[in-house]
Length: 129
Image 1 (cartoon, rainbow, N blue to C red):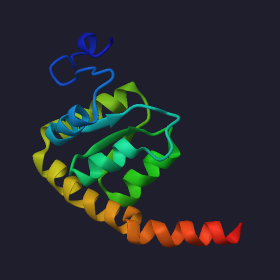
Image 2 (image 1 turned 120 degrees about the vertical axis):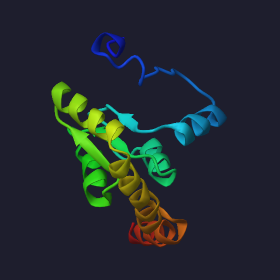
Image 3 (image 1 turned 90 degrees about the horizontal axis):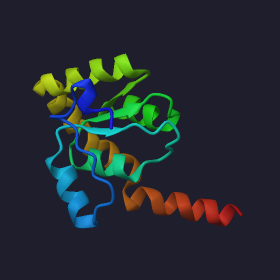
Image 4 (image 1 turned 180 degrees about the vertical axis):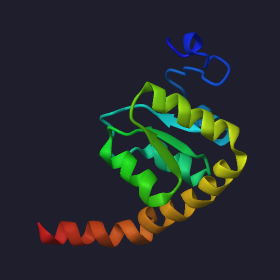
């Protein structure tokens, strides 16, 4: 585990598997949500974080997550370890930035992923097959 050796022991906790109830509590009490996967596409956890007003920090090699952060204004992305530390520090030390980002998440999720948006898109897709 590299977090403690890099000075992140007080802000990072590796969870492993957790129940849905535990996950909900962890998300609700998070200051920042980090998704380090370079291979992630649409991350349901990322959308849950946005809906819960948690600012995001995602791996910039994931084009989909990076685009969600860019389009929503609800998160930042990093490109390497140094950039990760810089942006994590920025998020943790700037409550105004976190507040601004947290306000944008729910609106983005509502605008793009509410059932009233998704169902017509799915219906159109299915009918086109």
